[in-house]
Length: 256
Picture 1 (cartoon, helix red, strand yellow):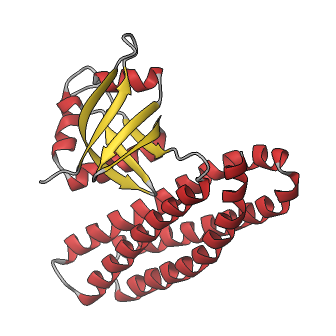
Picture 2 (tube, one colour):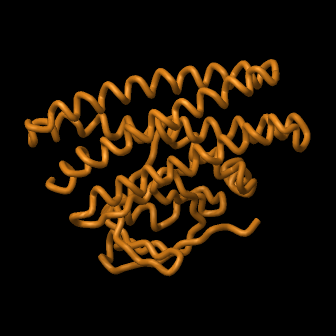
Picture 3 (cartoon, helix red, strand yellow):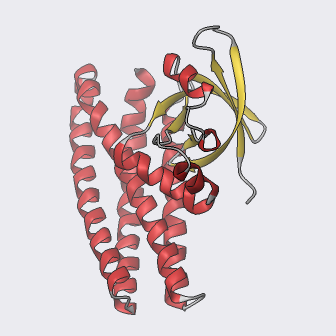
């Protein structure tokens, strides 16, 4: 498989000198994701130790170079991101089998001073792409293209990946809302609205997951059509949410 590659420059934990490493990466909701597999060796790679000491890194990818903040993912988010990568490239599943340590998954979030709204728009664009891919997977299933088990597996992977990314994005935002509301009391009504919308999206996410479970347990066209209808509803709700969030949350983040 032809992997997507980036160059990651970290600062040496001991030497304080720059160190550049070429890594395979994935994309998730406006972030780039890298994997501390070290080809399945028992020890974690040096770049992971470096960014733990200094999470400010530089990324070069696709002819662009920019600063980013590295964050280790944990729990369900880590598991989802690694499973997605192993599905794309089975070598990563083999790396995990070859080592007793849990391979760390690191998110690289771009840092652009004064451009928080732009960054938020990039995250939303990434979520849109994931939703588009999920809808395409539903259409493939409904069209009966390919073998049925393969179509269901592909649909399940896309749907769970999108739902997981959306949940993780909103969870991160919910964590910063109280601080931003304290710093910008005039925007508290906006943060309250965004919180309510997050709760509504979470309920629809649960409905999607339940429909997907029914579809994968007992595949029927009706269940697939219901899943597509739920996704279409979510797409419409999210467009209004994105526009409001970019206008209000982005403003606060830029000012902060």
